[in-house]
Length: 438
Ligand code: HEM
Image (cartoon, rainbow, N blue to C red; front, side, top):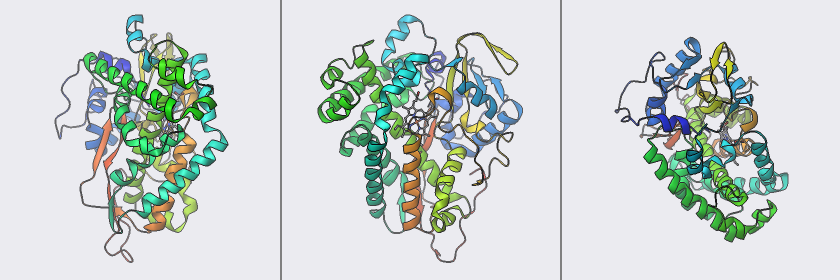
């Protein structure tokens, strides 16, 4: 996930790319704004993959017109994300930092000891006993969602991706799953704010205001409906609801981080679910292989996550003057790690566009280093569980001609609508064939 506050702040908000507008070339001066401003990646997936390929090959370290260093090499991407000399918090002047306080208080944008303390504070949410209960809920939820699907065709976006992750996120927080639709709508501005969408300052401020409403609403709801979870995390429910927006207080920090946890848990999982199902049904033979040998599913989930990561890019800032490769960076300069490009770096992954279940290489899909994803186990469990349930009910499944629709929010990429169906000649027809970059 990428904060992108500086990227957003420094852009003058040019109009978004017109429909059909070409993907920028790697040697264009500005690639970040067209890529993350609108829905260019969602509309032009293949074209953007070619841009990523060219970047990785020809310009693995590139300075964008907005001043960001764009890293597309896997090795340098790992190095940036793992090195505490690259921080997540944008270097804002004090008065702006005060304005953005609720978002800057999230673990996503803290660094050093304060960041480590936040991760420790929320770690009990992921303890084995709680996870066992959550896994049982997820398995049951997946089973009933899949059982309710029509026999021959369904929209995996509307019937699966938009429900399962948000309901999982509610239960993780100790809330009833029925709260999911309202919380997704409420927290949409938080997602936009952390998405790295280049926006003018006025839009950022409007999002911030709406995010404050979301943080307060979630804190109030949790105080009423999930006091046991809060006590378990050593958070006083009444103080949480009362001080959710009292910037600088410990309870305000807790409220911001609970909100971030909800958004982080459901968004990337929802997007990954669409990306994974799309690739799993497009690649020749992959779906039937999983149906026949479910033990392949965990490796397939990891490989498809490498090829189509929900977070296409992650942003950091040089904490002090330093050298990246042989390029000197000044303190505060932004660095954008192009996860989706680095994950296909041929120097790290042989035949990078192919699905190869024999790989055990690490990827940047869940980040790396101090900010690496806290929910990776949960996310993989849900994706694997869903693939197992779907391949069992539909031993053959293919993309349908009905229009699917990509979904992009800044650096986040997935599907809003994804139509899948049982091929007509199910018993005999070969699995659908697409080009490797599909
Ligand atoms: C397939 C689903 C998921 C993907 C692809 C994903 C991806 C990521 C990535 C790339 C990061 C690193 C952000 C950065 O370095 O700036 C991250 C961080 C994070 N993720 Fe996930 N994530 C997923 C699911 C989840 C789930 C289920 C949860 C919660 C239960 C979660 C909670 C978080 C949190 C709280 C952070 C911030 C960690 C920190 O800043 O220290 N994620 N995730």
